[in-house]
Amino acid sequence: MADPIVFSGGPHGNWKVLRQGPLKGAGLARVAFVERGSTPGAGAAWTLSGVTSNLRYTNAAEKKVLDATPSILAKPGATRAALIPVTKSAAWWAMAQDERRAVLEERSHHIAIGSEYLSLVSRQLVHCRDQANAEFDFLTWFEFKPEDEGRFDELLLKLRATQEWGFIEREVELRLEKVA
Amino acid sequence: MADPIVFSGGPHGNWKVLRQGPLKGAGLARVAFVERGSTPGAGAAWTLSGVTSNLRYTNAAEKKVLDATPSILAKPGATRAALIPVTKSAAWWAMAQDERRAVLEERSHHIAIGSEYLSLVSRQLVHCRDQANAEFDFLTWFEFKPEDEGRFDELLLKLRATQEWGFIEREVELRLEKVA
Image (tube, rainbow over all chains, first blue to last red; front, side):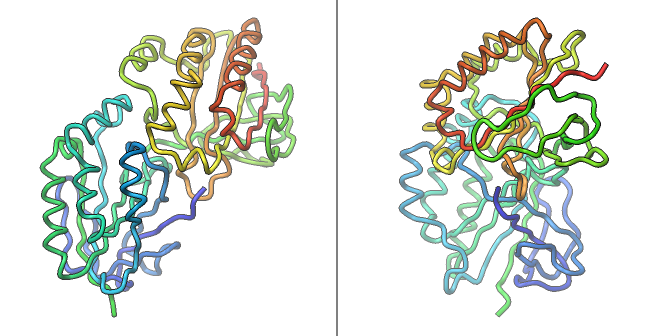
């Protein structure tokens, strides 16, 4: 139902790539810039697209916390960003809903950990798993101020140490700086 | 990740339309046949496509029941089918996961009701909500023997009487007969 959100990696774009690398599985072709828009960027080496969607695991009590701190993109001063496309394993997707919820939150505290960073890190979860022939399951996008980059790295370290992350079979990270 | 499943309504196809009608909201252009395939049918008046996906609400205990009675399409003798595209309301999608689960199962018994018909009605849930600009949220597909059509109608009556169905804002039904 939603409009597509398209990330294009290539020779130009509104975000300059500071560093890029695969963390697990195959990487993406190295690019100098990422364009975040609604249509593929001209001359792009690759494009990744998806849509925002409904919450999948968050319960009503957790949603109240999220709703009280809405994620606002393009905040003044938030000139750093990260694009982290991820794919989870077949074993993850074969689990029942309550089993996935238990790993994600009761055992990995994904929502609770993320909630500590809501005011510092704006985020957008772009879903592509249910698009035909998508390359990743999710395109995760984060924006923050340069002075909060250490806190963002801390958030990533915490999440990557969880049981849930054991189900990530492909992960690529691009760290970005807004083109002035 | 999955291959697309495409339903094309038009002048030819592998399923003959016995009757077609909107139950709620806008209908679809009237067609004589529906083709179920992986690419759009030639000369189609409309095409609807999506992908199969992971379970969204089913818990581990309920999944055991489903796994014990896998849905097999194209069973010998299952020459009747129904294609029922549906869209749920914004109010549905705005609910937290536990709130949607409570409506779907604890209050509407969707999974429990469906489980009574597993051996008679083969089904496939095709997701399209997370495809950019999709017309429906889901394309639900059912196959059964002509002699079980009454039981299938009974299943639909039960589901359409639930609280969950109050969140359906568009529903179209096409009843189909396999082309010999």
